[in-house]
Image 1 (spheres, rainbow, N blue to C red):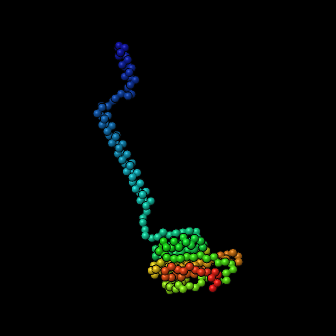
Image 2: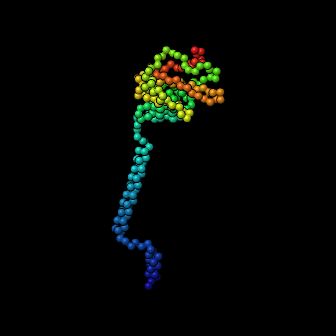
Image 3: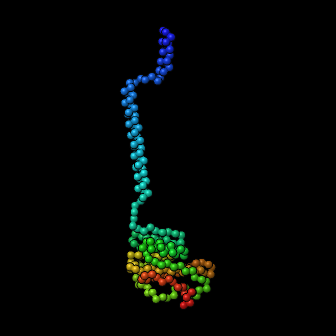
Length: 206
Protein backbone atom coordinates (compact mmCIF):
# COMPACT_ATOMS: atom_id res chain seq x y z
CA UNK A 1 0.00 0.00 0.00
CA UNK A 2 1.33 3.37 -0.99
CA UNK A 3 1.59 6.35 1.34
CA UNK A 4 -1.43 7.92 -0.42
CA UNK A 5 -3.50 4.84 0.30
CA UNK A 6 -2.54 4.95 4.00
CA UNK A 7 -3.52 8.61 4.24
CA UNK A 8 -6.90 7.94 2.61
CA UNK A 9 -7.62 5.11 5.06
CA UNK A 10 -6.84 7.32 8.05
CA UNK A 11 -9.09 10.13 6.80
CA UNK A 12 -11.93 7.71 6.06
CA UNK A 13 -11.67 6.23 9.54
CA UNK A 14 -11.65 9.62 11.29
CA UNK A 15 -14.78 10.83 9.42
CA UNK A 16 -16.66 7.52 9.67
CA UNK A 17 -19.12 8.83 12.33
CA UNK A 18 -20.31 11.66 10.07
CA UNK A 19 -20.50 9.87 6.76
CA UNK A 20 -23.61 10.29 4.63
CA UNK A 21 -25.40 6.96 4.96
CA UNK A 22 -28.68 7.80 3.19
CA UNK A 23 -29.52 8.96 -0.31
CA UNK A 24 -29.87 12.69 -0.90
CA UNK A 25 -33.52 12.30 -1.99
CA UNK A 26 -34.38 10.57 1.32
CA UNK A 27 -32.76 13.36 3.33
CA UNK A 28 -34.62 16.05 1.35
CA UNK A 29 -37.96 14.28 1.84
CA UNK A 30 -37.35 13.89 5.58
CA UNK A 31 -36.52 17.60 5.85
CA UNK A 32 -39.83 18.54 4.22
CA UNK A 33 -41.73 16.25 6.66
CA UNK A 34 -40.04 17.78 9.71
CA UNK A 35 -40.81 21.30 8.49
CA UNK A 36 -44.48 20.41 8.00
CA UNK A 37 -44.69 18.99 11.54
CA UNK A 38 -42.98 22.03 13.01
CA UNK A 39 -45.30 24.43 11.15
CA UNK A 40 -48.37 22.44 12.22
CA UNK A 41 -47.20 22.57 15.85
CA UNK A 42 -46.76 26.34 15.70
CA UNK A 43 -50.19 26.78 14.13
CA UNK A 44 -51.78 24.61 16.84
CA UNK A 45 -50.05 26.64 19.57
CA UNK A 46 -51.30 29.88 18.05
CA UNK A 47 -54.82 28.46 17.88
CA UNK A 48 -54.68 27.54 21.58
CA UNK A 49 -53.44 31.02 22.50
CA UNK A 50 -56.23 32.61 20.44
CA UNK A 51 -58.83 30.42 22.14
CA UNK A 52 -57.56 31.33 25.60
CA UNK A 53 -57.59 35.03 24.68
CA UNK A 54 -61.16 34.69 23.44
CA UNK A 55 -62.26 33.08 26.71
CA UNK A 56 -60.49 35.76 28.73
CA UNK A 57 -62.27 38.53 26.81
CA UNK A 58 -65.64 36.84 27.25
CA UNK A 59 -65.19 36.41 31.00
CA UNK A 60 -63.90 39.92 31.58
CA UNK A 61 -66.73 41.50 29.60
CA UNK A 62 -69.51 39.82 31.59
CA UNK A 63 -73.21 39.76 30.85
CA UNK A 64 -75.05 43.04 30.61
CA UNK A 65 -78.06 43.69 32.83
CA UNK A 66 -80.61 46.49 33.15
CA UNK A 67 -80.69 46.14 36.93
CA UNK A 68 -79.02 49.15 38.63
CA UNK A 69 -75.90 48.38 40.58
CA UNK A 70 -76.06 48.67 44.39
CA UNK A 71 -74.00 51.28 46.20
CA UNK A 72 -72.57 50.31 49.56
CA UNK A 73 -70.67 52.68 51.83
CA UNK A 74 -69.85 52.47 55.52
CA UNK A 75 -72.41 55.20 56.32
CA UNK A 76 -75.27 53.89 54.17
CA UNK A 77 -76.24 51.56 51.33
CA UNK A 78 -78.77 51.51 48.47
CA UNK A 79 -79.79 48.03 47.28
CA UNK A 80 -82.19 47.48 44.35
CA UNK A 81 -84.21 44.26 44.64
CA UNK A 82 -85.47 41.99 41.82
CA UNK A 83 -89.11 42.83 42.68
CA UNK A 84 -88.57 46.51 41.79
CA UNK A 85 -88.17 47.74 45.36
CA UNK A 86 -85.16 49.47 46.85
CA UNK A 87 -83.77 48.98 50.34
CA UNK A 88 -82.19 52.06 51.89
CA UNK A 89 -80.01 51.39 54.93
CA UNK A 90 -78.57 54.27 56.96
CA UNK A 91 -75.89 53.76 59.61
CA UNK A 92 -74.33 57.21 59.87
CA UNK A 93 -75.57 60.67 58.92
CA UNK A 94 -72.87 61.57 56.42
CA UNK A 95 -72.64 62.44 52.72
CA UNK A 96 -76.31 63.21 52.07
CA UNK A 97 -75.59 64.65 48.62
CA UNK A 98 -74.02 61.41 47.42
CA UNK A 99 -76.87 59.41 48.93
CA UNK A 100 -79.43 61.49 47.00
CA UNK A 101 -77.50 60.80 43.79
CA UNK A 102 -77.37 57.06 44.56
CA UNK A 103 -81.14 56.94 45.07
CA UNK A 104 -81.79 58.77 41.80
CA UNK A 105 -79.46 56.33 40.02
CA UNK A 106 -81.73 53.41 41.01
CA UNK A 107 -84.92 55.23 40.06
CA UNK A 108 -85.96 56.82 43.37
CA UNK A 109 -86.26 60.62 43.20
CA UNK A 110 -85.52 61.64 46.79
CA UNK A 111 -84.24 64.42 49.00
CA UNK A 112 -82.41 63.16 52.07
CA UNK A 113 -81.40 65.65 54.76
CA UNK A 114 -79.30 65.05 57.86
CA UNK A 115 -79.75 67.34 60.87
CA UNK A 116 -77.74 67.20 64.09
CA UNK A 117 -79.82 68.47 66.97
CA UNK A 118 -78.05 70.87 69.35
CA UNK A 119 -78.04 69.97 73.03
CA UNK A 120 -80.12 73.00 74.00
CA UNK A 121 -82.89 72.37 71.42
CA UNK A 122 -86.36 72.49 72.94
CA UNK A 123 -88.18 70.99 69.95
CA UNK A 124 -87.10 68.52 67.27
CA UNK A 125 -88.70 68.42 63.83
CA UNK A 126 -89.39 70.58 60.79
CA UNK A 127 -91.55 73.69 60.71
CA UNK A 128 -94.76 73.30 58.75
CA UNK A 129 -94.85 74.63 55.19
CA UNK A 130 -97.47 75.01 52.48
CA UNK A 131 -96.34 71.97 50.47
CA UNK A 132 -99.01 69.27 50.77
CA UNK A 133 -98.00 65.72 51.69
CA UNK A 134 -99.37 62.99 49.40
CA UNK A 135 -101.30 60.02 50.86
CA UNK A 136 -99.53 57.60 48.47
CA UNK A 137 -96.59 57.62 50.91
CA UNK A 138 -98.10 54.65 52.73
CA UNK A 139 -98.12 52.65 49.50
CA UNK A 140 -94.53 53.59 48.64
CA UNK A 141 -93.30 53.06 52.22
CA UNK A 142 -95.90 50.97 54.10
CA UNK A 143 -96.41 51.80 57.77
CA UNK A 144 -94.31 49.51 59.90
CA UNK A 145 -92.00 48.53 57.02
CA UNK A 146 -89.10 50.61 58.33
CA UNK A 147 -86.90 48.76 60.81
CA UNK A 148 -84.11 49.48 63.26
CA UNK A 149 -81.63 46.66 63.77
CA UNK A 150 -78.11 46.61 65.09
CA UNK A 151 -77.46 50.32 64.60
CA UNK A 152 -79.01 50.34 61.10
CA UNK A 153 -82.16 52.17 59.99
CA UNK A 154 -83.68 50.16 57.13
CA UNK A 155 -86.28 51.66 54.75
CA UNK A 156 -87.91 49.44 52.07
CA UNK A 157 -89.10 51.66 49.18
CA UNK A 158 -91.53 50.57 46.45
CA UNK A 159 -90.28 52.78 43.64
CA UNK A 160 -92.79 51.23 41.22
CA UNK A 161 -95.62 52.73 43.31
CA UNK A 162 -94.31 56.30 43.24
CA UNK A 163 -96.65 58.50 41.16
CA UNK A 164 -94.97 60.26 38.25
CA UNK A 165 -93.35 63.53 39.20
CA UNK A 166 -93.23 62.81 42.95
CA UNK A 167 -90.24 62.87 45.28
CA UNK A 168 -89.57 61.18 48.60
CA UNK A 169 -88.38 63.37 51.47
CA UNK A 170 -86.31 61.97 54.33
CA UNK A 171 -85.16 64.12 57.24
CA UNK A 172 -83.05 62.32 59.84
CA UNK A 173 -82.37 64.00 63.19
CA UNK A 174 -79.44 62.88 65.28
CA UNK A 175 -79.56 63.64 69.00
CA UNK A 176 -77.12 62.68 71.75
CA UNK A 177 -78.09 61.61 75.20
CA UNK A 178 -76.42 62.90 78.37
CA UNK A 179 -74.04 59.95 78.08
CA UNK A 180 -73.16 60.88 74.48
CA UNK A 181 -75.06 58.00 72.88
CA UNK A 182 -76.54 59.03 69.48
CA UNK A 183 -80.21 58.44 68.72
CA UNK A 184 -81.89 59.03 65.36
CA UNK A 185 -85.46 59.99 64.57
CA UNK A 186 -86.88 60.17 61.05
CA UNK A 187 -89.47 62.31 59.29
CA UNK A 188 -90.64 61.03 55.88
CA UNK A 189 -92.92 62.48 53.24
CA UNK A 190 -93.97 62.21 49.62
CA UNK A 191 -94.60 65.40 47.66
CA UNK A 192 -95.28 66.52 44.13
CA UNK A 193 -92.22 68.03 42.52
CA UNK A 194 -89.18 69.04 44.58
CA UNK A 195 -89.52 68.96 48.38
CA UNK A 196 -88.99 72.15 50.32
CA UNK A 197 -85.92 71.75 52.56
CA UNK A 198 -86.57 71.19 56.24
CA UNK A 199 -86.53 74.25 58.50
CA UNK A 200 -85.58 72.80 61.90
CA UNK A 201 -87.83 73.93 64.73
CA UNK A 202 -84.90 74.94 66.95
CA UNK A 203 -83.83 77.42 64.26
CA UNK A 204 -87.25 78.64 63.18
CA UNK A 205 -88.46 79.52 66.68
CA UNK A 206 -91.90 78.08 65.87
